[in-house]
Length: 256
Image (cartoon, rainbow, N blue to C red; front, side, top):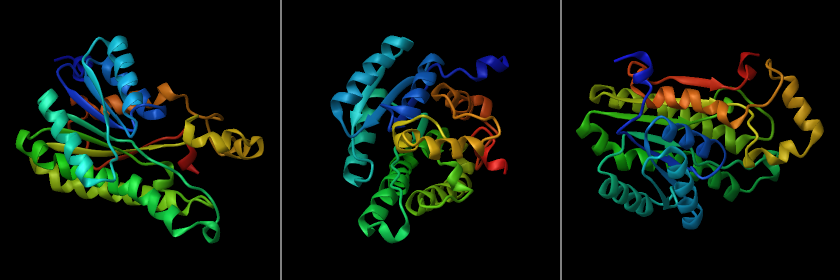
Protein backbone atom coordinates (compact mmCIF):
# COMPACT_ATOMS: atom_id res chain seq x y z
CA UNK A 1 0.00 0.00 0.00
CA UNK A 2 1.37 3.40 -1.00
CA UNK A 3 1.60 6.26 1.47
CA UNK A 4 -1.20 8.10 -0.32
CA UNK A 5 -3.41 5.04 -0.06
CA UNK A 6 -2.84 5.00 3.70
CA UNK A 7 -4.55 8.39 3.89
CA UNK A 8 -7.70 7.05 2.21
CA UNK A 9 -10.82 6.36 4.28
CA UNK A 10 -12.64 4.09 1.85
CA UNK A 11 -14.94 1.73 3.75
CA UNK A 12 -14.58 3.73 6.97
CA UNK A 13 -17.43 5.33 8.91
CA UNK A 14 -16.75 8.64 10.65
CA UNK A 15 -19.01 10.10 13.34
CA UNK A 16 -18.57 13.85 13.85
CA UNK A 17 -20.34 15.67 16.67
CA UNK A 18 -21.00 19.33 16.03
CA UNK A 19 -20.57 18.38 12.39
CA UNK A 20 -22.99 20.79 10.75
CA UNK A 21 -20.95 23.98 10.85
CA UNK A 22 -17.49 25.47 11.27
CA UNK A 23 -14.58 23.13 11.89
CA UNK A 24 -16.84 20.11 12.26
CA UNK A 25 -18.38 20.49 8.82
CA UNK A 26 -14.98 21.19 7.29
CA UNK A 27 -13.55 17.98 8.76
CA UNK A 28 -16.60 16.02 7.63
CA UNK A 29 -16.10 17.39 4.12
CA UNK A 30 -12.48 16.28 4.12
CA UNK A 31 -13.49 12.80 5.26
CA UNK A 32 -16.02 12.29 2.45
CA UNK A 33 -13.48 13.51 -0.08
CA UNK A 34 -11.16 10.78 1.24
CA UNK A 35 -13.87 8.16 0.73
CA UNK A 36 -15.48 7.88 4.17
CA UNK A 37 -19.13 7.52 5.02
CA UNK A 38 -19.95 10.28 7.48
CA UNK A 39 -22.55 10.78 10.19
CA UNK A 40 -22.89 14.37 11.40
CA UNK A 41 -24.48 15.07 14.75
CA UNK A 42 -26.30 18.23 15.82
CA UNK A 43 -29.02 19.10 18.28
CA UNK A 44 -31.11 20.18 15.28
CA UNK A 45 -32.46 17.34 13.14
CA UNK A 46 -33.29 19.36 10.03
CA UNK A 47 -29.88 21.01 9.98
CA UNK A 48 -28.11 17.67 10.40
CA UNK A 49 -30.14 16.11 7.61
CA UNK A 50 -29.47 19.00 5.22
CA UNK A 51 -25.73 18.97 5.85
CA UNK A 52 -25.58 15.18 5.43
CA UNK A 53 -27.36 15.49 2.10
CA UNK A 54 -24.90 18.14 0.95
CA UNK A 55 -21.92 16.03 2.06
CA UNK A 56 -23.23 12.98 0.21
CA UNK A 57 -23.69 14.99 -2.95
CA UNK A 58 -20.20 16.45 -2.61
CA UNK A 59 -18.28 13.28 -1.86
CA UNK A 60 -20.40 10.59 -3.41
CA UNK A 61 -20.51 8.50 -0.24
CA UNK A 62 -23.34 7.57 2.08
CA UNK A 63 -23.90 10.17 4.78
CA UNK A 64 -26.47 10.69 7.52
CA UNK A 65 -27.50 13.41 9.92
CA UNK A 66 -28.57 12.63 13.48
CA UNK A 67 -30.04 14.83 16.18
CA UNK A 68 -28.70 14.34 19.70
CA UNK A 69 -27.67 16.26 22.78
CA UNK A 70 -24.25 14.81 23.58
CA UNK A 71 -24.56 15.83 27.24
CA UNK A 72 -27.50 13.44 27.73
CA UNK A 73 -26.43 9.82 28.36
CA UNK A 74 -29.74 8.43 27.09
CA UNK A 75 -29.56 10.38 23.83
CA UNK A 76 -25.94 9.36 23.31
CA UNK A 77 -26.84 5.69 23.70
CA UNK A 78 -29.71 6.05 21.21
CA UNK A 79 -27.40 7.84 18.78
CA UNK A 80 -24.67 5.22 18.94
CA UNK A 81 -27.12 2.33 18.63
CA UNK A 82 -28.77 3.97 15.64
CA UNK A 83 -25.48 4.59 13.85
CA UNK A 84 -24.25 1.05 14.49
CA UNK A 85 -27.55 -0.39 13.28
CA UNK A 86 -27.56 1.73 10.11
CA UNK A 87 -23.85 1.63 9.23
CA UNK A 88 -22.63 -1.48 11.01
CA UNK A 89 -19.55 0.16 12.48
CA UNK A 90 -17.86 3.36 13.61
CA UNK A 91 -14.18 3.70 12.72
CA UNK A 92 -13.57 7.37 13.45
CA UNK A 93 -15.07 9.44 16.25
CA UNK A 94 -14.52 13.19 16.22
CA UNK A 95 -15.62 14.89 19.43
CA UNK A 96 -16.04 18.37 18.04
CA UNK A 97 -19.23 19.74 19.62
CA UNK A 98 -18.28 22.65 21.85
CA UNK A 99 -19.26 25.99 23.31
CA UNK A 100 -17.40 29.01 24.68
CA UNK A 101 -18.74 31.47 27.25
CA UNK A 102 -16.38 34.39 27.90
CA UNK A 103 -16.07 36.94 30.66
CA UNK A 104 -14.34 37.82 33.94
CA UNK A 105 -14.83 35.06 36.49
CA UNK A 106 -16.83 37.31 38.83
CA UNK A 107 -19.32 38.06 36.06
CA UNK A 108 -19.93 34.43 35.13
CA UNK A 109 -22.68 32.30 36.63
CA UNK A 110 -22.19 28.79 37.92
CA UNK A 111 -24.70 27.70 35.29
CA UNK A 112 -22.54 29.16 32.51
CA UNK A 113 -19.47 27.37 33.81
CA UNK A 114 -21.33 24.06 34.08
CA UNK A 115 -22.82 24.43 30.59
CA UNK A 116 -19.35 24.68 29.07
CA UNK A 117 -18.08 21.67 31.03
CA UNK A 118 -21.14 19.62 30.08
CA UNK A 119 -20.76 20.14 26.33
CA UNK A 120 -16.96 20.27 26.08
CA UNK A 121 -16.04 17.51 28.55
CA UNK A 122 -19.08 15.46 29.55
CA UNK A 123 -20.13 15.10 25.89
CA UNK A 124 -16.84 13.60 24.64
CA UNK A 125 -16.63 11.39 27.73
CA UNK A 126 -20.13 10.03 27.10
CA UNK A 127 -19.44 9.47 23.40
CA UNK A 128 -16.24 7.59 24.14
CA UNK A 129 -17.92 5.51 26.83
CA UNK A 130 -20.80 4.58 24.53
CA UNK A 131 -18.44 3.37 21.80
CA UNK A 132 -15.80 1.78 24.05
CA UNK A 133 -17.00 -1.81 23.74
CA UNK A 134 -17.40 -1.44 19.95
CA UNK A 135 -13.87 -0.12 19.45
CA UNK A 136 -12.33 -2.70 21.77
CA UNK A 137 -14.21 -5.62 20.21
CA UNK A 138 -13.10 -4.62 16.71
CA UNK A 139 -9.60 -3.74 17.93
CA UNK A 140 -9.76 -0.63 15.80
CA UNK A 141 -10.73 2.99 16.25
CA UNK A 142 -9.53 6.51 15.64
CA UNK A 143 -10.72 9.02 18.24
CA UNK A 144 -10.01 12.70 17.64
CA UNK A 145 -10.86 15.09 20.45
CA UNK A 146 -11.04 18.73 19.40
CA UNK A 147 -9.28 20.64 22.14
CA UNK A 148 -7.90 24.13 21.72
CA UNK A 149 -4.72 26.12 22.01
CA UNK A 150 -6.27 26.94 25.40
CA UNK A 151 -5.71 23.32 26.35
CA UNK A 152 -2.07 24.30 26.91
CA UNK A 153 -1.90 28.11 27.26
CA UNK A 154 -3.95 30.61 29.23
CA UNK A 155 -6.04 33.60 28.22
CA UNK A 156 -7.88 36.07 30.41
CA UNK A 157 -11.67 35.84 30.66
CA UNK A 158 -11.75 32.23 29.44
CA UNK A 159 -12.00 30.27 32.71
CA UNK A 160 -14.87 27.97 31.63
CA UNK A 161 -13.48 27.23 28.18
CA UNK A 162 -9.82 26.84 29.12
CA UNK A 163 -10.76 24.60 32.04
CA UNK A 164 -12.83 22.38 29.77
CA UNK A 165 -10.21 22.12 27.05
CA UNK A 166 -7.48 21.31 29.55
CA UNK A 167 -9.68 18.51 30.86
CA UNK A 168 -10.29 17.22 27.34
CA UNK A 169 -6.56 16.95 26.77
CA UNK A 170 -6.22 14.80 29.90
CA UNK A 171 -9.17 12.66 28.78
CA UNK A 172 -7.29 12.11 25.54
CA UNK A 173 -4.12 11.00 27.30
CA UNK A 174 -5.86 8.64 29.71
CA UNK A 175 -7.95 6.96 27.01
CA UNK A 176 -4.85 6.61 24.83
CA UNK A 177 -3.38 4.49 27.62
CA UNK A 178 -6.58 2.53 28.25
CA UNK A 179 -7.21 1.66 24.62
CA UNK A 180 -3.68 1.18 23.29
CA UNK A 181 -3.78 -2.58 24.00
CA UNK A 182 -6.75 -2.80 21.63
CA UNK A 183 -5.12 -0.95 18.74
CA UNK A 184 -7.34 2.08 19.25
CA UNK A 185 -5.69 5.49 18.99
CA UNK A 186 -6.84 8.62 20.80
CA UNK A 187 -5.44 12.02 19.88
CA UNK A 188 -6.28 15.69 20.35
CA UNK A 189 -6.21 18.51 17.86
CA UNK A 190 -5.61 21.96 19.33
CA UNK A 191 -7.03 24.58 16.95
CA UNK A 192 -6.08 28.21 17.28
CA UNK A 193 -8.17 31.09 15.96
CA UNK A 194 -10.39 30.12 13.05
CA UNK A 195 -13.26 32.16 11.62
CA UNK A 196 -16.00 30.02 13.15
CA UNK A 197 -19.38 31.01 14.52
CA UNK A 198 -17.99 30.62 18.05
CA UNK A 199 -15.42 33.32 17.35
CA UNK A 200 -17.80 35.91 15.87
CA UNK A 201 -17.51 38.16 18.98
CA UNK A 202 -13.77 38.45 18.37
CA UNK A 203 -14.13 38.94 14.63
CA UNK A 204 -16.63 41.73 15.26
CA UNK A 205 -14.19 43.65 17.48
CA UNK A 206 -11.34 45.08 15.35
CA UNK A 207 -9.16 45.87 18.37
CA UNK A 208 -9.46 42.39 19.85
CA UNK A 209 -9.01 40.79 16.43
CA UNK A 210 -5.78 42.69 15.77
CA UNK A 211 -4.47 41.73 19.20
CA UNK A 212 -5.01 38.10 18.26
CA UNK A 213 -3.31 38.45 14.89
CA UNK A 214 -0.33 40.17 16.50
CA UNK A 215 0.36 37.00 18.51
CA UNK A 216 0.14 34.60 15.57
CA UNK A 217 3.53 34.07 13.88
CA UNK A 218 1.87 33.35 10.53
CA UNK A 219 0.07 36.69 10.87
CA UNK A 220 -3.48 35.57 10.15
CA UNK A 221 -6.38 33.43 11.31
CA UNK A 222 -6.87 29.92 9.96
CA UNK A 223 -9.10 29.09 7.02
CA UNK A 224 -11.65 26.36 7.72
CA UNK A 225 -10.14 24.02 5.11
CA UNK A 226 -6.82 24.16 6.95
CA UNK A 227 -8.20 21.91 9.68
CA UNK A 228 -8.76 19.06 7.22
CA UNK A 229 -5.21 17.83 6.69
CA UNK A 230 -4.44 16.99 10.30
CA UNK A 231 -7.92 15.57 10.87
CA UNK A 232 -7.53 13.25 7.89
CA UNK A 233 -4.08 12.14 9.02
CA UNK A 234 -5.25 11.26 12.54
CA UNK A 235 -8.34 9.50 11.17
CA UNK A 236 -6.36 7.39 8.72
CA UNK A 237 -4.04 4.40 8.82
CA UNK A 238 -1.17 6.81 8.15
CA UNK A 239 -1.38 7.69 11.86
CA UNK A 240 -1.43 4.10 13.13
CA UNK A 241 1.54 4.72 15.47
CA UNK A 242 0.28 8.06 16.81
CA UNK A 243 -1.68 8.08 20.06
CA UNK A 244 -1.94 10.34 23.08
CA UNK A 245 -0.69 13.25 21.00
CA UNK A 246 -1.85 16.86 21.16
CA UNK A 247 -1.17 18.65 17.89
CA UNK A 248 -1.65 22.40 17.53
CA UNK A 249 -3.20 23.92 14.41
CA UNK A 250 -2.77 27.52 15.43
CA UNK A 251 -0.44 29.33 13.06
CA UNK A 252 2.27 29.16 15.71
CA UNK A 253 0.33 30.87 18.51
CA UNK A 254 1.43 28.41 21.19
CA UNK A 255 5.10 28.74 20.23
CA UNK A 256 5.32 31.97 22.24
